[in-house]
Image 1 (cartoon, helix red, strand yellow):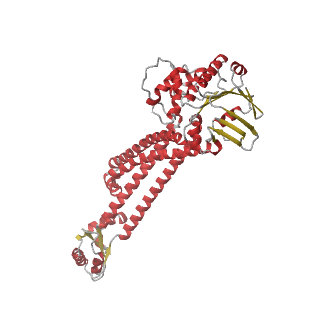
Image 2 (tube, rainbow over the protein chains, first blue to last red):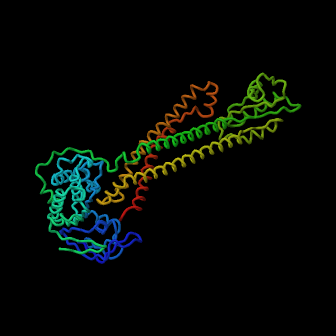
Image 3 (cartoon, rainbow over the protein chains, first blue to last red):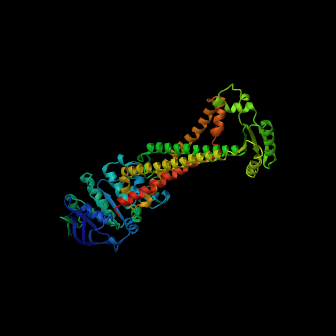
Amino acid sequence: MIEFTNVGLRYGNGPEILRDLTFGIEPGSFHFLTGPSGSGKTSLLRLLLLSLKPSSGRLTMFGRNVSALDQDSLLEMRRHIGIVFQEFRLLDHLTTFENVALPLRVLGQPESMYRDNVTELLEWVGLGNRMDAHPPLLSGGEKQRAAIARAVIGRPDILLADEPTGNVDPELSLRLVRLFAELNKLGTTIILATHELPLLDAFDFPRMALKDGLVTLDG
Amino acid sequence: MAEMVLEAAAADRTEQIPRRTAAIVPERSVAGRTLVLLIAIMTFLSGVTLGAVVLVQKSAIAWSTDVGREVTIQIRPVEGEVMDSNIRTAIALAEAVPGVSEAHALSLADSQKLLEPWLGAGLDLSQLDIPRLVVVELSDPKNVDLNLLSKDLTSVRGATLETHAAWRQQLNTMAGTLVLSGVLVLALIVLATVLAVVFATRGTMATNREIVDVLHFIGASNTFIAGEFQGRFLSLGFRGGLVGGLAAIAFFFLVAGAAGSLVPDQASAELGFLFGRFSLGLDGIAGIAAVVPVIAALTAITSRFTVRRFLSQTSGI
């Protein structure tokens, strides 16, 4: 599903943030992405989200070389990828329901078509009674669950998470990762970036460790 | 995947209530009131300029038509000639030309009135040898043969024909210049509006960067994002345009009312002659009303192009 072949990344003329990455990720797998701050985790996720292109090497996703794709094809491919951020990035002027429905709305679907799906998904993540609340009124855990729901409502094949537990307490962190694990069981490929050791130890998923721009696979 | 998620969803679903979906680009985040005010002012200026152009053009056409319906024969006093006889001959010659409806001489009293602004009132013209004027009314200004009349008048010593052609040409040139100036002002207002909307849009894009980023990473195309901003700016442009357009129409009604009630009767009549009593007419009002959708569309299109350009410069993909 995802193949890195000697992929390097640098911003402008700066130093290489990622160097000579060569690894593959199978469909339906769950990987932790670890590494110290500044090791390039977010840059790697941005490559996977197609908001950056490799400076060197070849990145293949869904069987296609992303460097060779035009903007429309990249956009189409991006719709198969969901993302969850540490800082949630919900739109404060929209309700929880509207935030979660946003990916379907941008596809031009009318509300009557997605209302039931969004409602049921919100109930599944435990936000059935918070649908009409705006993000500023949600707790950190509720915001992150809303962000996860938004990331999966479009049925992505890959779900990326960039420090999704960074703004919640340890107990809620475990519950959130369990939610990701549930999604993984349903077939979604998950790459979850975190540097929280207790989380890594609590789940038996393979780890990709980034250090000095290089990646090592463990497990 | 989501289908499986849905299967796993809780059975007790909340009752479905129709929702009013909020706009993706919040109205308050677009420098709303300032832009509405700016567009209202621009529309007002456009409307007033357009109205002024319509007034000038209408008045110029009216002047030209009025003046064109009349020519004047001037008869200078010539020694040995009897003025009254010459006047009668000139009237007879004029009335014999096809297309002339009537010719009559201005009395000494009429001539005195015409000269009053320069020579003052109470002057006895009977003591002076002044030229006399014969006013020739044309029933068919287009087909009247003024060359024939001019030629016939050579038989009357001291008589010359004044067709007002030079004056009419000057009038047309002046009116044309005013109309052209008005069009230029309109073009500048449009340009200023476009620039203001460009800056407002870029400011809005900068303050809504988070929304743009979120839309990008959930898979929204640049076309979709531009459409969302365009819709918001179309609404603002229409509101601003409506306010400005109505204000411009109200302005002309107020000026027309003020000119009729505040200016003394004689001055009012002269103003009426010059400006047609500031009456825009239905076509003038329709022209100003047409400015409203034009400004709204201009605002929307400008914002769309600006957003597309902004996105193409900042988009990661």
